[in-house]
Length: 445
Image (cartoon, rainbow, N blue to C red; front, side, top):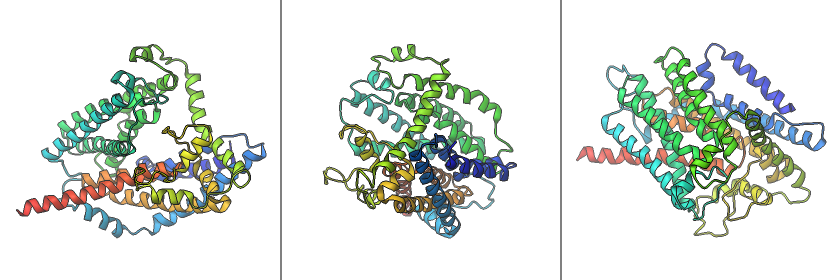
């Protein structure tokens, strides 16, 4: 284990000890998952080599700076400021008897959210069917497949936003189904759960398939916090967790293969080969550390630093590439091209906060990027913690997006993380504000 892994494991142990009697609070704590991610990506390496040791120290330095700014930002972000943002986007109508811990969904809201989820599922399948030539080809691309027809970046961003919204819709239906004993919402939750799995499997990424498990756990943690549930429904978990994890483990054995038909992929499944599953998983985590090491050995020696490149690429990212063909790529894209990926591919690699920060300006770049990301994640964490206490389903949905945003940046590839964390959250708040304004105008008429 690396020095970073030992240090972060110690902090993780403290979090477990402090929250030993309130596990739901630990589940809702973004920093707990941040620590888990740090251990996964940077906790294991042979530090007997000098270059690996320097990389480990860079990761440790970056984590400490991140930690300091994370808690400064979280502690000093005003609750009133968060309430101002959230209530401006979507005001709360407080009921006189105040008997609801989660406001019930209206029939119109249920219909709208169901249509929105179905639209995402259809558009995702349709877009990939067009991109890969057929639905069969899209269903067996399994992570490594390349589309024969280019998907516009605007379409990708739109689908990513719909994906984030769909995850939230699943959460909303479970919240309302359990908190208000709404049978329709419970049934729709399980239907959407199944559809989500079917749509995500072809992507070949295990994280997408396991995602619904986190949705259930997070939702139940919110319900425990609101005293709707007395404890986690462990019997339910014992039924669905093994099934989903088995699907995810199976993907590790086939996602690198090339198949013509879904039947060929099914025949290639090797569910019992756990050694292969473990090897593929470990490789996925260790490669982030390896890219960090490569950057630290290269930038400042063989390559010049890229001062403030990450911040600059994020600031200019909203400008369409059609209007600015020479717009800078994200650093993850540069890293992928350095590793041999063609420029026209959609591949983007990650090297953690320390790796990307070092490329931006050595040790000063690590400190700057770690502090900036730490402050940003601390703000998102406070945003989520504040809105998790709201009875508004809409606010709980926004809180979940903020909760996810607080963890997106740890793996690296900051521009990609920014797109997954910040854009959907901003889009949601703006869309809610627009919808609330339109509804007020219609009500006045």
